[in-house]
Image (cartoon, rainbow, N blue to C red; front, side, top):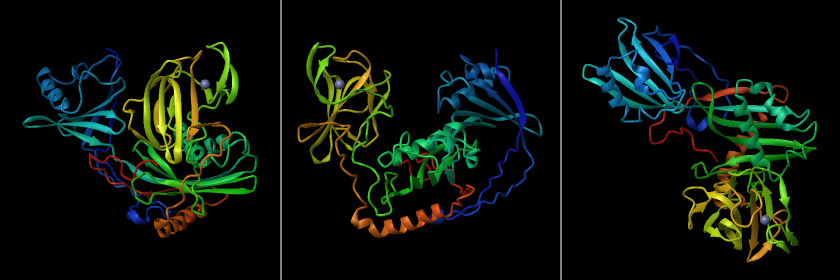
Length: 436
Ligand SMILES: [Zn+2]
């Protein structure tokens, strides 16, 4: 049996370290101070990683008697199936130092969940433990020397972040500024940026979730600002400029993250399948089969079905008489049915070539009051500004979040540990809001 194994002694009682700042002042940057607490280790740990095709029981064979295994696996199966565990699952056997007896087993089901198995006189019992999440805020600034992507990915202050997490930061910036600045075409050498990003971090340093609190981009001398504001505190906030105007439009520029346009809106074109001229009243986006399709605006699904020419189709009704149509889908996102409420950027289905189509692509249409509009040239309606009843709350948040930006030194970016979240209760694994 092939198996990777390493033996380690670890400090069994974790030394928790952080500056605890009261929740209401969490966004005010304060320099973190790390205090260690030393406790002599009480356990020896053996850490295994499950091989391909190996079961939990097989892994335990060499360490535990068959009798004990039965009780352990039964306790484990209260939380997960011991026969269906993914390759690479980390399993930690915990031995008491004094007499080298096995006192517990930890199984890391996912990066966020561990089953802790414990033994006492009565046998084995189990608990599901949520990985503690820390919340911190990253402060970043920089000047663009080539392109924004390079500048952020190579930013020295982000050295401790994984490549995937740095990429995710750029995605967040792109999503927020997509209507103001085209990152691939408008960014110039000498443009500058600063942003404050709040994230949830696992003990291993990987990012679980996060959102921009405030960002500034100076593009060719023009500053753009985006301040996060979530008046209801439900994680469904939005971004506004300093005047309280929405930085978003009611519609995304495109329903795919992907950019290549294969056929534009025209009143007459030669149809490759029908072999005759007819109007093309939408935009085709060529993309790989299975590429995720997003709802371009908040709305309600009014059609989800199969049409002989459109193939698998979704139609969504939005405010002010707008309707969007997404055609030739390979499949629908599960749970999206007629009557479903969707939010802008929600995934609704996947690119395919059902109906009259010669290759995988998304056909996308926009209609207003029944009239076809060219999605590439229509003047997209603006998103709603800060509601007047939230004006005072907004002004307060704006002041706090602009202060965050202004605290970022221009020369050298800094990162500050701001707060430690408590281990959240099981029904609410996210310590601070959700993603916007
Ligand atoms: Zn088309």
